Length: 253
Image 1 (cartoon, helix red, strand yellow):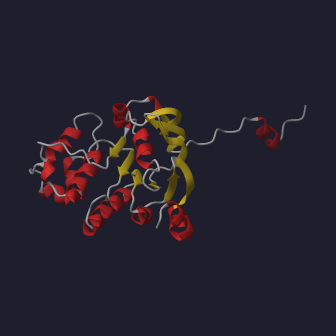
Image 2 (image 1 turned 90 degrees about the vertical axis):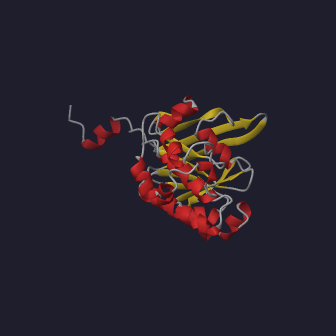
Image 3 (image 1 turned 135 degrees about the vertical axis):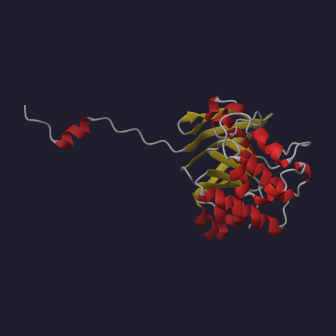
């Protein structure tokens, strides 16, 4: 029998499985009580990428973030969530956090009665530890100045800095930012934008939910637009910025 050619030999080999994205959601469905909030949401994120998750109020953005972080509400009823080939959808919230999912919620969740530094140290109690205090203060010099101050007495912008820094105090593989510019003066928004830009430069994979869509798009690599709990558009951030009709239809800008 004549030997098989290289082409024939390769044809007999099974096709290699496609490489899984660094992070992916597949057909997420979530409910708040009886309300169907997250409706078959799917998207991928490459490592080191910043994704803007956009949409009007009530579109399901925060619910999607909370589902990824494995919080109890909304309740995930079907779908899969993968990070570095690990099944987040099979984890509880504390397990996802320990694996590297860092959620910075809209309300910041600053702990009353503790100083800035105590808030940061508390985040470092559970392993694995992320950034050291020295590194945090290097990126957040304002927090270094306020380290002995009770955290709840900080300004809104300073509290937002602390919320982001607290997430980085744990080893973070996926950073989820929920409305980081909410309620802040424009000059403070610029400071938070610089911090998020630094995080991007450090290669931390990030999802940002933000009503200030233009600010989020200017930082992001790609964008997902949700409408009524479903993915209405997926593409690059530049494509959304350049498409006035799309922005008007789904973002009212």
